[in-house]
Structure formats: C-alpha cells, structure tokens
Length: 203
Image 1: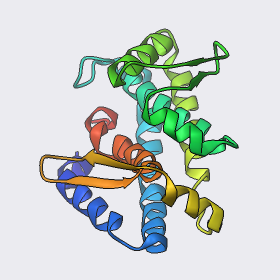
Image 2 (image 1 turned 90 degrees about the vertical axis):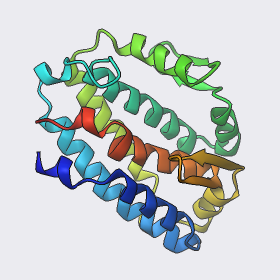
Image 3 (image 1 turned 180 degrees about the vertical axis):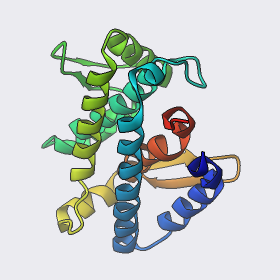
C-alpha cells in the first residue's frame, strides 16, 4: 500500500520532538495542525475497515477491533479529564492510573498498571459489534480534538503548561519531558498515527 511505504515513524517522532521544543503558542499551533491531519487519517482508516478485517488478528494478537477499542478507551479517559471542572486533580489521578470513569457501570475504577487497564477494556469491548466500536471511536476521537481549538483561551494554555512534568520515552533515541497534559495529547496522536498504524491500515 502506497501510504505504508511513505510513512516514516522516525521522521514523525523527530517532528514531535521539534514541536515540543517550540515556545508555547507555536507548539500548541503545531500540535493542533498535526492533530487535524492525524484525525483525518484515523477516521479514514476506521471508515475503510470492514467487519471482516476488523476481526482479523492484529500484530499483538488482539483483533483489530479491540485495538481500536483500546485507542478509544484511552482517548475517552482523556476527554473525561479535559471536561472535568477539577481537571488538574483528574490529570494527577490519571497519571497514577486512578479515577477512570466507566460510563457503562457508572463507577470509578483504578488500575495497577497499563496492562491492567488494557485488559479491562479488552474485556469490556470483547462482545461489541465492529460498527458500534467504529462509531464510538470516531465520536470520541472528534470529541478529544474539540478540546484543542485553533484559538485557545489563556486559561486553557495555562492549564496545559502548568501540570506536572512527565518523561516520555518515545524511542531508544528520543525521550521527551513535557507537562503531563501535553503528554496525554501527544500520546493520543502517537497511538493513532504510529503505534497502531499497521493494524489500522487496510490493504
């Protein structure tokens, strides 16, 4: 597939590192632009994925549908945080893997580690139809993007900038230390654009 041959993960990571080093407003504007391109590709991948393809095994042994559910679950948690009046405290909790709200069970859940969260979501969505996962994934992804408008308020920029720093190892060559909120934003794009790309693309 032409798109697969052209995409270069190393260049993507280098670009993200470059963006992270920019002053606040240019950094924000660059991430907004990257988010728009990433979301467009992500939605295109989901739209073109058939039910038959969705239930093929992915590169890590899950079905492709559950890979999408995995991406969606993390993004949904982030939308919960960004919509919360006490989002500063919610960020702190999420970075400890605490305070995920399960909207189906109407309860808050804490996790021991990332694998624990991923296993929880795999069980939650195991019996969902692909079309339902796809619709929810697109809805959640667009909702997440809505928190990052082209003309942000000073309050929103201050919130993004003032959360605790987080050191994120992108690759063996690249490590970023950024505020936790920037990390949560960036890692969503990395999920969609790089980490799970080969399982989202349809031959």
